[in-house]
Image 1 (cartoon, rainbow, N blue to C red):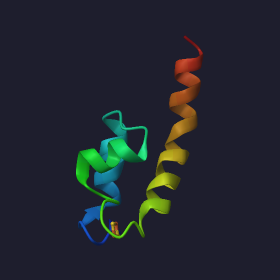
Image 2: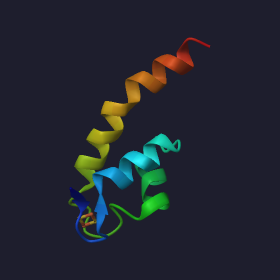
Image 3: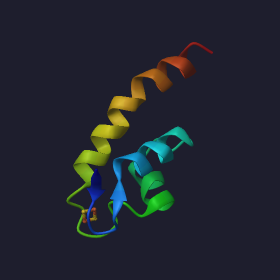
Image 4: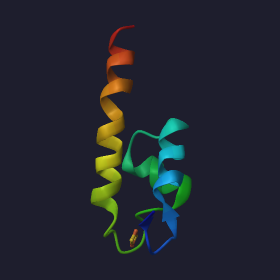
Amino acid sequence: MLVCICKGVSDRRITEEIRRGACTLRQIQDGCEAGTDCKCCVRQIRQMLASSGPARQSASESR
Ligand code: FES
């Protein structure tokens, strides 16, 4: 499914960026350009980051 229509970036591509270590909107933008044009997709990208966040956070907190 396309998340960023302007840049033609799919949810899979954004998930891949998150898996590679992107944890901020800026890192997603730098990695695949999603959310760098009209910004309509930024909210969805943030939601994807938030839903992937707790697992990573709790992993780093346990160190
Ligand atoms: S839809 Fe992503 S920047 Fe426009």
